[in-house]
Length: 117
Image 1 (cartoon, rainbow, N blue to C red):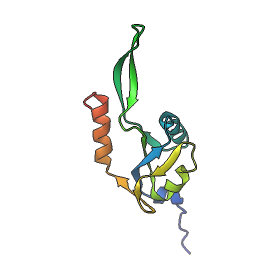
Image 2: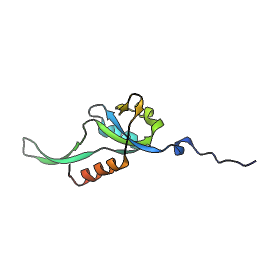
Image 3: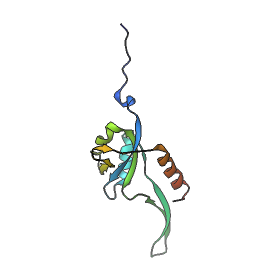
Image 4: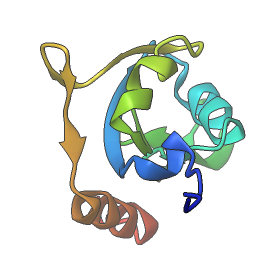
């Protein structure tokens, strides 16, 4: 009798990118929480020089998409992030979450890295 090695279900699922809509002002906290949970996340930010009335200037980061974080995970895990604090929904049609191509995520990373947004 041949023994088959048991492969965990997590490693059998293919990872894809999903866009998660967050509640207002929760983007950075959601990103930290998801990364702490072991997911790869991407929050598209761009830097802008901000000047206050008192003359102070600072480079401030703003989100490129107002209420979205991008997270890489298996399709079966999408429901799990909805219980995370600050995630309102995962984009998709009906009950099926929509995946994003890796090339789009890489293009966003490249654009935001070099400030070409």
